Length: 327
Image (cartoon, rainbow, N blue to C red):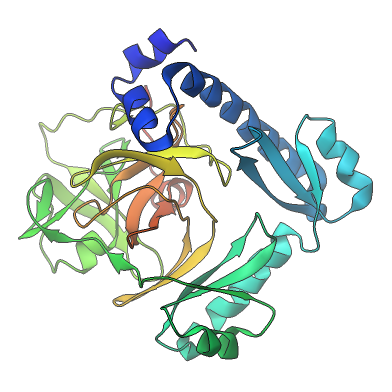
């Protein structure tokens, strides 16, 4: 797609990518095409490699997809696609199982542990904890994990005006037939009120952090997130560029971080979130994440000054049987 086409279909996107990602219009256009190809390659290799698939991520420096493999005999399968092959010790399934085991023990974790996830880039389990509490985190999770100290996450709800529930404000995520998806804590943490533009069709928090709203008659639903037209809901690779639209910070961009993260908010634990370094603030909760090429990714859950977590879109559509609006 040419620069002119991108700007015509997604006004403001290239400016946001230049501001947040440091790429000019030409580089942004090339990056979109490269990431689309990498996304398709990851999905095909996930199937082709089976149990030996060790996760994948997009390397921003080389602009190539890096695919982990636990079986050396299958490195050639990866290289044949043009992706970079990397021999790793643990498969994606093994890493996910390790996360599931920690999830099962979540109730025994000290309050200073704020979550855990599988790091696809380093092929290891990472446990997050508030500063100065690494030893307590290792006592809980074991010595075979990496502890990362960072500020505690919070859910993002505050008084204001966007879509509101009583005196609290949240953000529309992605539109679906009959309404839109958003964050579950926007329902649970704001009491028994209804959104000012519809009614709750369903919500889940904690455990998950998603909801959907049946919009009122007269509400016009457009297949866009911020300035980008929604094309589908294919999940982007770790390291790929992604943007979000929220009612507080507006249109901001960054990269996809580790997936399937467990995050311990003060109000309860949420599993299966994806991290990003996209900027978000209170009031952005529920806002939509999307790739610059138009693949919907999820809705803002919460975070801290360095990380913004989102609940993946595919799960929300599946749970409620929703149909994504696309342009």
